[in-house]
Image (cartoon, rainbow, N blue to C red; front, top):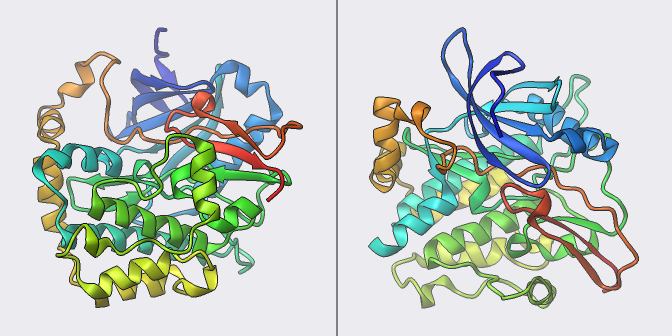
Length: 357
């Protein structure tokens, strides 16, 4: 499929990815040459008011979020082919890619993982307490914190992206009764009951940090049903020190606390979790994280240095594109768990409905 020459105010360099309901393009802002990732609904999805409503919700919410540890939104609009979002392009890679590429070299150093955790906690602390122009809390909950939704940059920052599943007080498109959104392996037990708050995001972040330390997912089951069953039976993550004896005991205890099934046992908020991380063990400097990211993605570093990615074909996997497309699934009369998998997703997030307990 040929790429358009322009979407909104951005020149299109090339098309780089597609999912069941959306496409992603590499774009460039003419006035300063800054690159962006453009997410656009395909024409069929743009005719569906549910998809359009959720897409616009994502854009309106992202427009409120201005923080150095959150991938920023540049433009929300509608082209002749469909609605689109233009978001910050991050030179680096996703946390998922960093983990995969690092495996042959051994586990990630503890201090680098803590630095990543501190950055993501800062992003969540900001989003969770954000207020509107009338000083009313927006009550934002990301609900999809996972390695695919965290970018790590050559500048040594971890940036949270994709508030496409976020729950905010003033969203137009409300979650339907019984509908749960997120990735199976990072769900908190309360999400299965259809509830969530800031501590839900902390649970997911705790699972992400445990995974970075262990080199594998905590909830690593063959089927969605098995994963859901494991979440239902969950009490708290097992001690990471059985796999990583080099992890300080204080950090181990904190991860067990933040992944407790009962939200009341977790840290009260993201700011408190960030401070607890820093008390548990020192974090690496941003410069150290940046050097590690550069060493992990030498091919991408070379592309950035010479700008050759502009001339590459659309088959390449680019940094900054692990964004999750709009998720929506109308609940059917299916007993227990109805699963809608990645046919709707570019980044692999899922929506599923839970009926019964």
